[in-house]
Length: 93
Image (tube, rainbow, N blue to C red):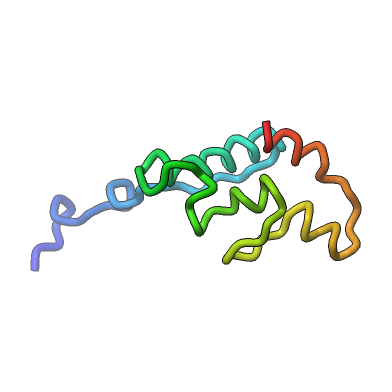
């Protein structure tokens, strides 16, 4: 078995993604839009809301989907404050 450096696949060659800490609301919205638009860009669906496993419908309308997420709607239903209202307006823009 050849274990020379040239025969191994390094981490830099095998990873197609990287983690990213989101510290601002602006960056959160940017990343969420990217995630929601990705199934459309990949040709899986025509509209973001058509992708079953997307949280798009939940963020846009409050409708629950097959994957439970924490959001403005779930937070306020459990008695949390309405602090996310400005974020919801930006996400819908």
